[in-house]
Amino acid sequence: MKEIKLKPCPFCGGKAYLGESWEQTKTVQCSVCGCGTLHLKNKLDVIELWNRRTVPEDSANQQN
Ligand SMILES: [Zn+2]
Image (tube, rainbow, N blue to C red; front, side):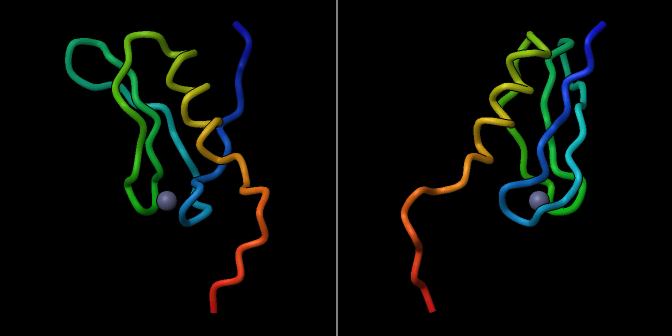
């Protein structure tokens, strides 16, 4: 089966992992800050969901 790489956490850059929860749903969570995706039944869906969250913002953010 094809392995799909999880992108690092969009918030802290921590390592993400694929977890299972109740009723055999899947979730991707950050191992550092604990943020994660929704719980979905399809593994590929949560991975895609997680990876989509890490898309960098186009606009230059100038917060100081
Ligand atoms: Zn994190």
